[in-house]
Image 1 (cartoon, rainbow, N blue to C red):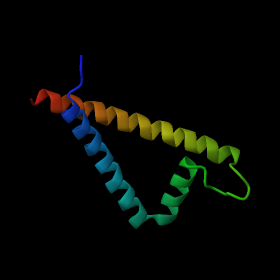
Image 2: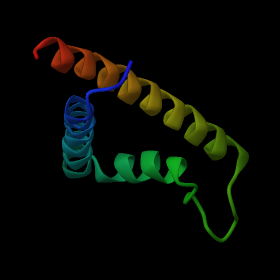
Image 3: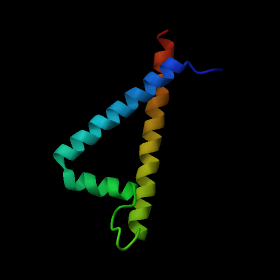
Image 4: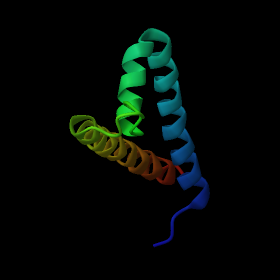
Length: 85
């Protein structure tokens, strides 16, 4: 089975648009929390000391959860878009 490229791209753009809006809202409402959350994900907790163990684990867990949610919503949207053709 081949994917409908247009519907696939629409699903991807929709999911990333939502994440971008969530990110902007988090930065506006809780900048310190947002900096902490995203620093775990990209290992920027303390560049002088290197990556510490708990923050690295938090980052792995955060990336896992965000990827799962993104892929799930992406697949759900893709299936809905394909059904509407």
